[in-house]
Length: 149
Image 1 (cartoon, one colour):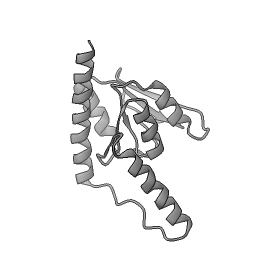
Image 2: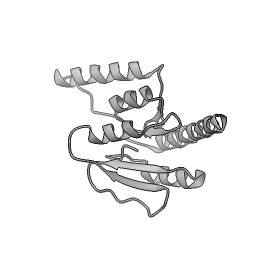
Image 3: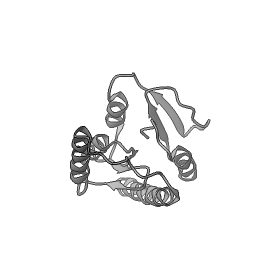
Image 4: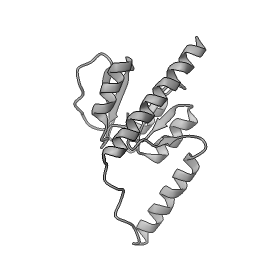
């Protein structure tokens, strides 16, 4: 989990406990996490993209990366991992190019002074969609692990 400003940490902890899935909570500064053998906080150096680099270096094809960082999502997909953002959007090979392009267009418009008001507020529908997609990705990862053994 790319933990900086992640609004669904508690949900991830609950779902991970239910499924017995380990969670790495990666951030540039110390972050409080529940005491659990399944949850490990990883503090990385303050250099730019240190958290992203650490996450990508650890990934396996059965891992799920939780991030709203589009470039990190692209790197995780390239490593073969599943990727989910906190609003329940699953990133795949089929849609990551569009997400990267939209990000660039938005940055260009902001630089030109024609930006919008930022993302919509996080709401109950986002949380519900996130939980459903997280469940789907965990089930897919479990199935992949079973087929590999």
